[in-house]
Image 1 (cartoon, one colour):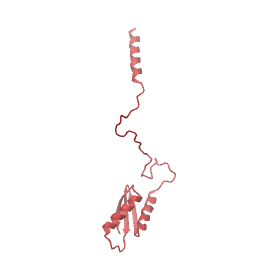
Image 2 (cartoon, helix red, strand yellow; image 1 turned 30 degrees about the vertical axis):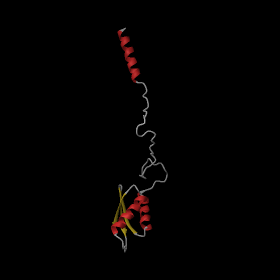
Image 3 (cartoon, one colour; image 1 turned 90 degrees about the horizontal axis):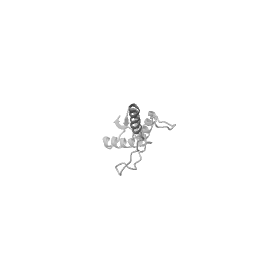
Image 4 (cartoon, helix red, strand yellow; image 1 turned 60 degrees about the vertical axis):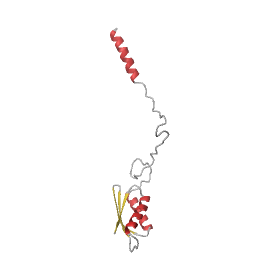
Length: 123
């Protein structure tokens, strides 16, 4: 009889421990009603991006080259390593401050391909 009582108590304890958890509730705390957007993905090679058209590094190099040439400068070699893009630019006979031109061009390139830290070098 003791064994039966012990097994009943043990069964009740185990069954009560396996009850489903309540979902978390927010009581007006920060983040209530906030919806996270997981569709934003700056990496075009990511497998989370399920679109058929996946851009490659050469596509990004072409976009950078288009921005440089749209500004009226000659683009040289464009090297992308990790999250850094190194852009060689020939400013020609620019009469303006070269450092200011580099900064303006880097800002315009960054707007086109924001996933990279842009480094503009004078050729």
